[in-house]
Image (tube, rainbow, N blue to C red; front, side):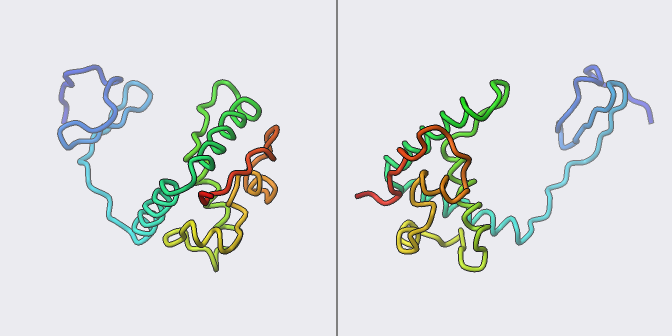
Length: 153
């Protein structure tokens, strides 16, 4: 079946009118009906983890968050190319929490961890400097000054 596009083929990429278009090599365009992907148990687990970590970040000490912002700035200037989009403090926190979980997956459940659990376990994610010393984060200059605790004093 032949048909004529309202726009040049090279501009079609994405979803329009419940049809998904994919453009290849500027002259081949494939259209298919868009279908909602099936939900999986892994998506439910990731949702619970992200919701819980958002609450942990929200309740964390503001000085702890400021340390992450400082770390993100130093990481950007010392470790990344100027052409790379730098990570933000929250994304570094999320990466840190997953690295902590990967260090002991049998005992750390990110879907239910709280600030009190982190403090009780004296976890290496309590402060940025502890996380760098534990190898969860890359070292930056003067990282040892980023020692504010996750729990407010």
